[in-house]
Amino acid sequence: DKIIIIDIIKKFINLCCIDNDLNTPNPKIQSIFQKVNAHEEIFLLLSVPYKQSYHYLFKLCYLFLKQFCMNNKENQLALYPKIEFMLS
Image (cartoon, rainbow, N blue to C red; front, side):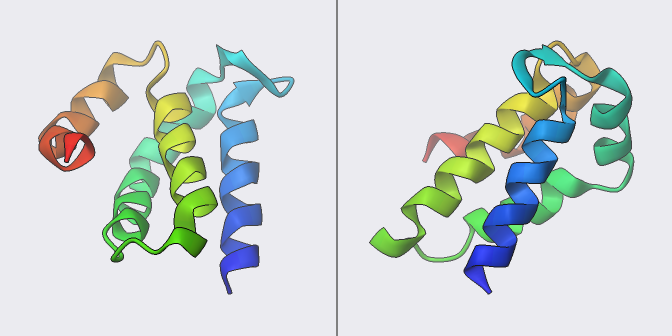
């Protein structure tokens, strides 16, 4: 269900931050998400054909990827192979 997925992604975004501050990354949680390939699951969601009703979900997916990579070189490198996908 889309609402459950949205809630989960919102929680993941907040976990990537310290004290829900989007400008303060949580490197330990970022590392855990990288080890379990959470970013790959986000890319699976983003590969669903776009519909206007998915706009908010897609926006949250990109926000997660941003928080996942913030000040984290290893996670930035993990996303590098997907750069063409993100730019298209």
